[in-house]
Structure formats: C-alpha cells, structure tokens
Image (cartoon, rainbow, N blue to C red; front, side, top):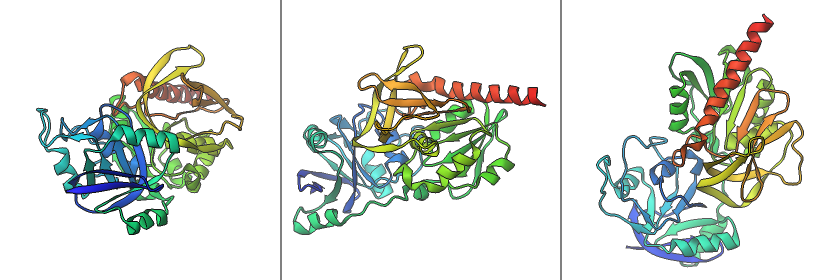
Length: 360
C-alpha cells in the first residue's frame, strides 16, 4: 500500500506502508545512528514526532524485551529506508512491523532517506505528516498543525515510585526518563525515587536525597516553568546532575539562555572533549536546543565542548555541586564512553556527604 511523507514546505516522499494504517502529523526528527532503533522508538524524548532513520536498513534485529527505554512509545510515526519482514536475531520477540501495529504507530518504508536527510540539512527543522494521499487537504492539515509545549506533562510519571536499592538516596525528576538511566544508577547501588517533573521542592526535601538527577525529555525547556523554579529552590541544597533537556532547564534556572538548533541533533557518535584534560569521548546526543552563543555562562563553567564546532555541551556550577551534559551518557543506544558521568555524580554526592559530616 502506497503512503506519503509530506513536509510542511510541500515536499513529498513516497513509500510503502507498514505498522498501523492510520494518518498522523507531527514534528519530523532525523535519527542518524546506524544502530539502536528500538531504544530510539521507545525514547520519550521523541514524543509527538515522526522519527525518520537515515541509516538505510532497519528492523533486521526485531524487538526484544531488554532494549525498551519505555514499555510504550509516544511517537507519531516511523520512516525508514529498507525494512525487513523477518528478524534474524535470536533475542527478538517480534518484528518491528508487529511492534508498531501493537502500539498503533504508522510506518513508511522504502523511502529515499538520504534525499530526506539532505533536504532537512538544507532547509532546517519542519513539521511532517504520514498520509494515504498528498492532495491539497493533506497539505492544509500539516500547515494548521500547532505543536504543543506540554510534551513533558504527557510522559512524566503521574505518581512517585521507587526503584529500591541499598545505597545513596537519589531523587530523579522525570522529564521523560529512560530505563537505562535507572539501570546505571542501580549498578551504583542508588536507592531511587522517581518523581513527576513538577514535584514541589518541599516534597523533595522530605525525602532527604543525597542527590537529584534531572532527566532528558521532549519539548521546549522554556515551557517547564515549574521545573525551572524547582531547580532554583533546590540547587545549593543537594548535588544535581542533569541530562539533555535537564541540561537546558538547569541553564535557564541560572539565567543562561538556550536557543533552538536550526537542525535538531539525534546521533550516537558525537565527539566531545573535556576542556581540562583534552580527553575526547564519543557519546549519543538527542537535542533540539543549545546554549545561546550570544550569552555568557555567568556562574556556570564550561567543562565539555564538541570537537567539531566548539559548542558547550557540559558545564559545572562555579560554586555549587551541580553539573550537566547536553547528551546521553547512558549509551542507549550509543558508545559507552559516557558511563563515567554517573561515577562523577556518585563522587559529587560522596563529597557533599563528607562535607555535611564535617559540619556536624
């Protein structure tokens, strides 16, 4: 069955339908990694978006029970080049097509994804739709689409829940949390409590955390007014580690501006360099926002920059136990170079605990 990917500038890409046979409209995101399609599809950072994979072959390893970042997906659609009707991996439980049907997510395959990538690289971010036709009515639908700013409220947990362990007491503010973040904290024996994104700072205080992690997630950071205020109220009281969208939230809480990228970055091979040591790590990045180039960092100190572009993607607070990275150190999917950032968070909490003991 023929279907069409229609971009808001009127460009049309034809392909064949798979997954659910429904029409959909959303923002278009390009994922440039060669691996990790299951992790990307179940990553809430792509809430409300049509996710297009630029690596030409997808689906050959199927869907398995261990690589879910969330049990459900909040995507609007999936676009791929060459698809596989069967799976060749021993660990797979179902095909990509069967998973998308179960989740009621439409897909489009046999698309010229290289041409799509070049088009977005030239013209920038835009909205898109998956439709059975590409007539004038379909074009009008995408032009009328208003992308909401409340994606975090759609995917953040509605109720607090624990991920028990024996060790440091860590609060996670869920802006669109990935399971692998919990796994990395659990490996380091953290006793975790996951809280909604708008949890009052007074409730966080009752949990007496040793540290607070602010997760990645979807949408515009400026829309998270409550979360920004929470960070302002808790910083200085607890060590804070922020990832992705959390990076932008902490920046805004410290009066540092963020801006929208002309082209959002969804990749698993970003080279970042630590400014003090010169050591380069390869990490995954999923970000539509960056620190404003026209704004100074004020009380924040740049710690990591991109090798190809010198963009600040990591900072520490000059005086408070806070650090943040604008990439995904949990490596799901992606290289494992960034795992040490979770160790750094543990050390930050250790130092705060030792300082508190000296004071009493």
